[in-house]
Length: 272
Image (cartoon, rainbow, N blue to C red; front, side, top):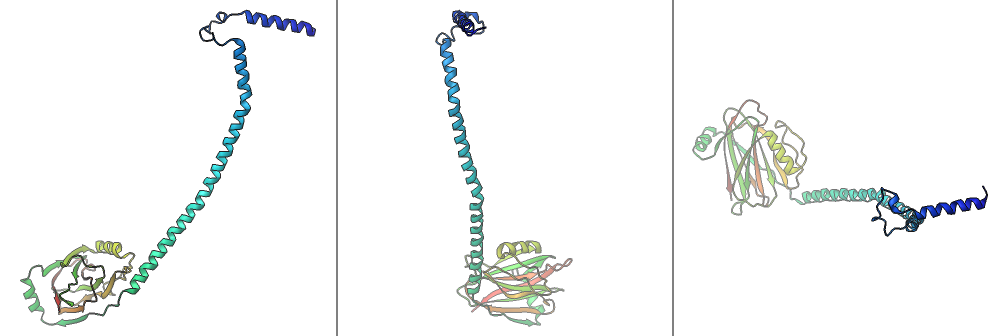
């Protein structure tokens, strides 16, 4: 077929297509395409074809933006690492400040202690006084909180027990006094250790036979380590001059006893 024949055939085919109406295609309604002639459809398709490179350019720009964002995210852990270092520096600074505060506290003088053979007389007297005769159950620790008062200059104590000894020690809390009442707190040994851990930070466990635990709280100082006292043989007494404003903690420790409860007779009072 010559080139002229192919051109004539193409022209004839285009003429037939142009003569066809939309009603020749049952799947397409004339209502949908009254305003869309065939050449309009062809132009639309051609414009969509030419817009493809522009869309491709947009995609490349989007990829470039996402690449920049991923690089920014990769830099984020470095910033977080700097933040973690800042927290470590703050923690180290607070520990150093706590050590400086502890170093500034004045040293505490040792207490004055004595013993007395008037065991029966003290027990007879304290039996008639309210809350002066108590039972410290096995495994328990009784702590007497005694705040300093402006009217006095020292705190004094006396105690005795029936039949068996008991552990005894004294601490001083430099925290400013907000309540002038003498308070008693009784706890199991595990509860007392948890309370000390919350109040004082890490502590190392000790033995009543070897003395009390070492404390790290900057506000709490040890005056007399907890030792077992022969309070069933003689009255154990003592006094301590106020070092300043704060609260004394007198501990009666029966945590080492697995079977025996201890009957305790005690009194705490102020002296000028």
